Length: 326
Image (tube, rainbow, N blue to C red; front, side, top):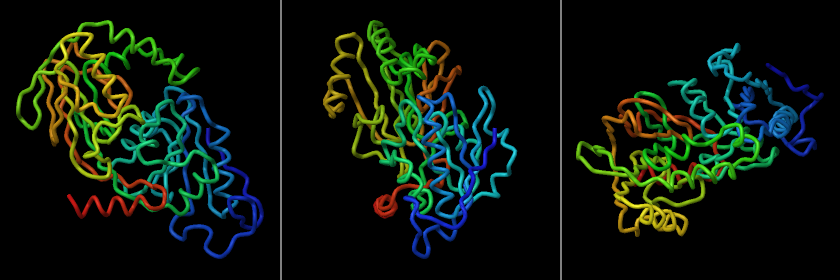
């Protein structure tokens, strides 16, 4: 369903007042907003308000509400006719949006509307409609370090073992209804299982793991710090390998994670990496950016593309500092 928000006569700022000259960014005036109605709790009211704010500021905002089970590439309008494409949803929606954009130079923005919204937490994106619209109009564009798994985009994280089991056991209908509390039972069910080990190669070197996290971002599940040495704006992974062989050891790891110092757990090893390979993975639970994936093997490669994204003011300075130090 494609909607065009009625544009009032004249131009207004985000609060409905007459603006000063230059309210709308000269290079960013046409927006395509793609809303995923099955993401999280479906914040369509916020999405429509963002569109209205954009149009009050003199921009054009076309709102496309996806039908269930349709692909993002089914959009009727050519992407390159817009100055920005905006995803409304969670991390899975963002991942599919990045895949749709491919190597396009059209920047994308995000209206956080999913359950996890890990990318939104990582980049400290605003949640109020007026602030989101202001960011889309005037925010800088930075290059996200986009990884790949078996050739498909991966923005944030690949998890094998424990969190793969959690995501595999997550009832999606309940997740859409109640949000994060839906993870409670799958976490308990995964904790009840005795950890089983599998082989993984990190930059060609073999390791034995019972839980693997390949992180392209600093945080896990949005708020829990994995490593200060990882940032989605800079290339490379932080690979977390767990060698826990008992439920008690796994619980201790999670307590360290919640406390913000997972690296102190005796069963945890962390290392930087550019490639990760898992073979013989037929019975291994794996998740990518919060969605389950199934394959007999996996190859995860860092920084295969630099994806342009609109972010809040000031984050471009962080990106430039990281680029100088890398």
